[in-house]
Structures are given as C-alpha cells and as structure tokens.
Length: 206
Image (tube, rainbow, N blue to C red; front, side, top):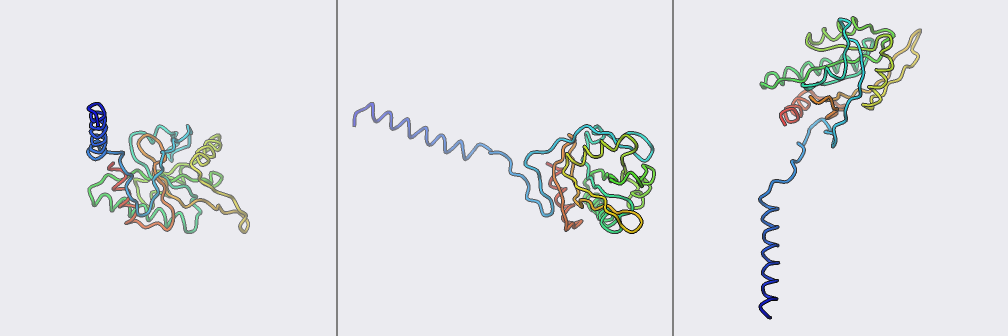
C-alpha cells in the first residue's frame, strides 16, 4: 500500500468518525410529547379570518386567539347531554391545571345553533359551568363566518327534525388553539379530565 492510498484511507476514516460524533453529540429535532388523551397535529392548522359575536354584542374574531392558549368546543345550548357534560369536564380540567400552578387555556364555547342561541343566551349558558368561560355564536351576517370556521377545523354538525322542532348532531371533540391562532391538538372521546389536564401541562409548557 503506497503512501497516497494510506492517506486517503486515513482521511475517510476520520471523516466517518466525525460524522458519528456529530450525530451523537448534536441535538436532533425535538420529539413531540406522548399524549394520553389528545392528538397533536404534525403541522398546526391556521384558523381562517372570521367574525362571531360575544355575549356582550362585541365581535369575536381570529385576533382574539392571539397570545393565549384556548380550548374550543362547538355545540348548542339545547343539547341534552354532550355539551353540558363536556363543559363540566372542562371546568374540572381548568381546576386541575390551576391546582398544579399552570395557567389554563381560555375555554370558548361556540354555538352552531344561532337560530335559537342568541349571543346573550350562549354567554349565560357557559357562565353556569364557569364564569370565566366565553360563549360566542353567529349572529345575523355571521352565519357564513361560522361555517367558514367549522369547515376549516373539520367540525361537523347537522340539523335533524325532532318532535315539533329539531336537534343538532355535532362533533364532540375539544380543540386546542395555540397563541398563534392555529389548531394545535385535538381531544376526542372518551374524554377524561385528568388525562386532558396532563396533556395540556405538556403541550402548553413547550
């Protein structure tokens, strides 16, 4: 083996060792936290521009999500079981996070039944579960905005005849929206307060 060949082999060996060391010492991309109840989106989904109405009549828009974590749930105030059960559960989630010294996300309940749910009624409804919860809905020309928001977040709902009136079949998922107004994670049934609180402790601290 001549000197030139030996030098080439030595350089190749050193390069290989350097590559191994770099792969060992340099940090790789952060792994997403392992969640108990939720599913973190691989790529957060930006919310579209929209305008709904708060209980006090003021607009509720995409900008209201900026700078703070939010938990968003879609339903209607005449809901016999899923909506009240979920809002009671979210109240427990908030309490558990506060007991752990973690600032909980702002909970927002969005009514998909503006025909019966006025902004004032929605606000009064959520205050029964927690006075800090926000209740919003479409009002007048906001109907198209509601549909734009639900479609962007893949939230399904359907009106079905029931007796002399109708009921609403709707998604029971709870969505986590990050401070950049993007859907960050989703929680689907069965929902357990302790598991959701544990997941949120991981997600909102990263």
